[in-house]
Length: 404
View 1 (tube, rainbow, N blue to C red):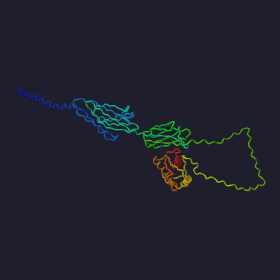
View 2 (cartoon, rainbow, N blue to C red):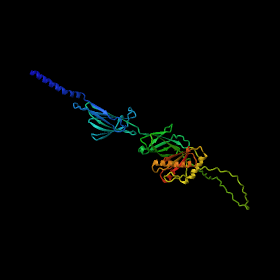
View 3 (cartoon, rainbow, N blue to C red):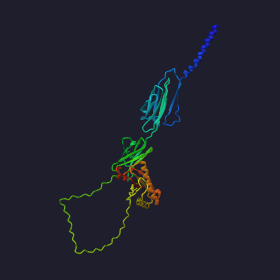
View 4 (cartoon, rainbow, N blue to C red):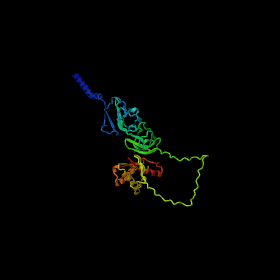
């Protein structure tokens, strides 16, 4: 009997031991690392956080984690080789800036950490992400796929002849300015179309200059504020050299011309004036010959200083323009206002446009249809003289009209 009780107690003890050991075995057999992301509904380009949770695995040794960073534009199959990544570690406080060769970077992480990463490239928006890195017995793998959006703008440039309006194929252009960088860029147009195209890193104000054989050089600032931009140069040909009279040398055999002596007659005959038939004199055109597309300057237009208010001294000149439009009822014109380069660029554009509108209001008030008139403010863009002194700046402050 005692033996039977002893065996029973031993069996119960073994059963109790097995009951306590069983959950531990199940826990160890189910040891795992569970990763999940909370980056849904987060706008692109803002910091995103990836959270990792993992079950305790005290019975096994943790392995290093791996991190893969990829940069691409538009399609993930097209890596962005010019991209770089900036990584800051919370544990160490250090910041690294690394190039993504072939658009990809592999990193091995041996300790739990939180990383703050930003992938960027010239001409693209940057993408940021925060990521918590954990370790596990089988080694975790993390990925950061950064899709960068292009931000560069395009510019198409060409030059045309002022009289023929045909594209000048041999024109060369130079682009400079703070937005273009420290150096100037020389552009060569397409031999067939005469168009020059370039991608620029950002919007802003640039300075364009042109050189074309047989034409005067031209320089003007332009403000680029859209993704696709166009700039057209209107070039005038060099004026022909004036022909000076040639003095013929006097040769040794030349006989000097003798001037006849003037003799005063004793009696002066009385001349009876004969009336000549009157020949009508054609009226003088105030603006000279008018050609379609050629700017004609209104020389006597005056405004209050830094204001679009017309002065009364401008009325005679505008009355002549009114007469021209009245005699040619089918003609449509474009009024162009110009300023010097002093002051804010945008304010100069607005002032020149408002002054053109003042001219149009005067002509409309005298009976010219508003549909025949168009106001265009050019500001300092189409300068006719360098803005290096007051005399030249005065030349640039002007109003033109162009027959369309």
